[in-house]
Every structure is written in structure tokens, then in C-alpha cells.
Length: 280
Image (cartoon, rainbow, N blue to C red; front, side, top):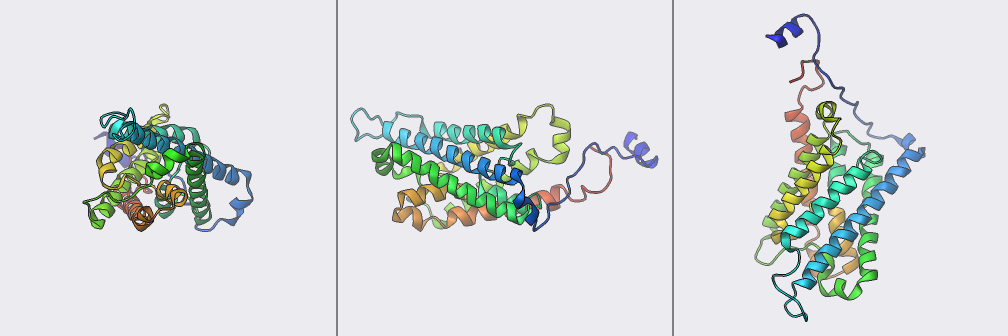
């Protein structure tokens, strides 16, 4: 009844403001310091993300190597620890960079936000380049500091596990990235921000937890990419045949998953959000 009374009097209970769509081309932003500051933030965040997570993978592989002196097949952090490492780093880095660049740290996230008109084409392309360069540098730093371990244990490169089909790997990447990008849209939605702005940690926490859950499910299949830059950096620095043979699915899968998530959020969940209506 209260909602009907509000509508009848011509008032809107809408307590949030949807941001205007980003222009497709915005050449003017290239001349702003804030644009380059955002690129630096994306580069550094992706560098740190790859550096820490690849060290976690290599460390686990070394500790659990039964052929190594002191190695224990049941040692190390295990899949659970690796998943926590990836999710925890995303939580930290999104929290640190969200106010500067939006905290994408992932070309698939950038692609999904571009499709939803949250960023311009110029910014989307620049972000993806910065993310890939950061991934290469972060992986290269690991190799520079631990060359023997890096080469011995595959450099944390994504590849399809033995016994799984290409379709299974591609499907895992599509669904995993859908979960991640869907969470990003939901966590950064204008309506949710208006109500949860007093708890700024909620958005990066939910995004990091989504990354954690997807890794738990798909590490045994592809090593879990859901981030083309995460796969690109190790593939470039390791430069072995198997990671390159499977590399296409770590771009195609995440981009398809991101596109589906963007369409679902914009045209199903948020359909008609621009109309004036009481909030619910």
C-alpha cells in the first residue's frame, strides 16, 4: 500500500542515481592524468597479482613434489590454498585500486564493462594492454628470481588437464568467468552502492570470494584462468607448446562468459532500471 501511495502522489522512492553510459569513443580522456594514473594502477595491480599467485603455485608444486628431497605429495597449501591465494589477491587489489581505475585487473572484466557502456572503447583497449603487460612483467619477475623452479614446475601456466576435452575446458572458462563478471556487476551496481556505501569492503570481498569459489571448481580442469592476462603472462614467459596450444580457450571462454554476464545484468536484471520507480 505504501508503494502505491507514493506512486499515486507522483513521488519516486528511487534512492540511487544510475551513471550515464560511457561514450563509445572518448579521445579527450587520453589527455587527462587520471587516465594514465588508471593505466598505471591496472599495470601494477596485474603485475602484483601474477607475481604472488605464480609464486603460490610454484611453491605448492615444489613442496608436494615426491621426487624432490623433502618433498611430500600431501604437503603445501593444496588446491584450497591456491584458490585462497587467487581470491585473496583479487580482494586486496580491487580494494586498493577500485577508486583509481575501477580495479578491473582482468581483460574479461574490462570487456564486460565495455559492453555495458561502463567504460569507453579507448579506455577498454588501453586497460587490456596495461593488464597484459603487467602480467608479463609479474611473471617475468618470478622467473628472474626463481628461474629453476619456474621452469621445472611449468611457470604457473594454464593448460587443459589430461583427460578433459577442449569443450569441457572452454565450458569451465565460460561459466567461471560468467560467475566472476556477474558478481562484479552486482557488487558495483548503483542501487547496491547507494545502500551499502557505508561498508566499502563488500564489493571487493564478494569479487574475491567469487574468484576463490571458481578456482576451487576449475583448477583441476584448466588450472583456472577466467582472466586472459593471467594466462597470457605465463604463456609468453614460459613459451612452451602445450600452454600455447590451449591458450585460445583462455581468451575465447572468458570473453564469452563476460559478454553473457553483461547481457544478463543489463537486459534482464536491470531492464527498465532507468525508469522512475520506487526502490525495492
